[in-house]
Amino acid sequence: MSETILKIDHLQKQFDSHVILKDVSLSVKKGEVIVIIGPSGCGKSTFLRCINGLEDIQSGDILLENRSIVGNTTQIQKERQRIGMVFQSYDLFPHKTVLDNVTLAPRKVQKRDKAEVEKEGLQLLDRVGLASKQNAYPRQLSGGQKQRVAIVRALAMHPEILLFDEVTAALDPEMVHEVLETMLELARSGNTMLIVTHEMSFARAVADRIVFLDEGGIVEEGTPEEFFEHPKTDRAKKFLASFEYHR
Ligand SMILES: Nc1ncnc2c1ncn2[C@@H]1O[C@H](COP(=O)(O)OP(=O)(O)O)[C@@H](O)[C@H]1O
Ligand SMILES: [Mg+2]
Image: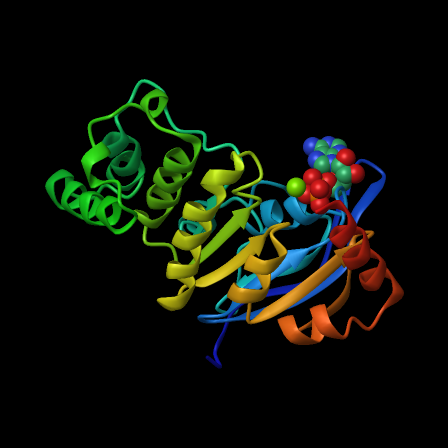
């Protein structure tokens, strides 16, 4: 786990004159699992969206294996397919079956062979316990099942980096666990992951490194033990304390 796969270099992001991310730098190693935590509105989603090219940036750079992926050329769009993202709202196509939702992008965007993609899609669905739902429609699934389908849909594109933005935040409590288990399994099998979550015990279990973001900057980072047991800054201490209280 030594090779840097993703480098965010002095990233600055504004919405109009409002600076959301100021001078954020972060290097991610291949196979590393980073959990990003911080108060609501501090820029966590914006940070992931910038990495995935869903937001333009004002200055700085984002490098995937030393090549910039800032911009919108065809080549950069292709490079960006190496990064997959899962959102809080699953955004499945309601009129398509589970298997079609999973296989659509690999077939249409990556122009891969239908039979091959379907075979793999079924294997991935099986891995998250949903092979039997291949012909179901999203409305026939629970929230937890829909989110696992959304994860499989991201995996079907063979991403080298996975971004997760509060993927359990909209779920009923009893369904949170099944989605976190799926993510733990992905982490254990060596995937490179950036995860935004408020599930602190999960963060602790899954992360190689915790990054604490506040007011548009990285305030503190460290191992889960360092961060949760010995937070260095008052802001992190305060955040953790408020969290204990609200749980
Ligand atoms: N499309 C947008 N236009 C203007 N402001 C935005 C937009 N998206 C997010 N923001 C603002 O950027 C800040 C960070 O938002 P966000 O990244 O969603 O925070 P978090 O995910 O940490 O809760 C907030 O102040 C939010 O209002
Ligand atoms: Mg957010």
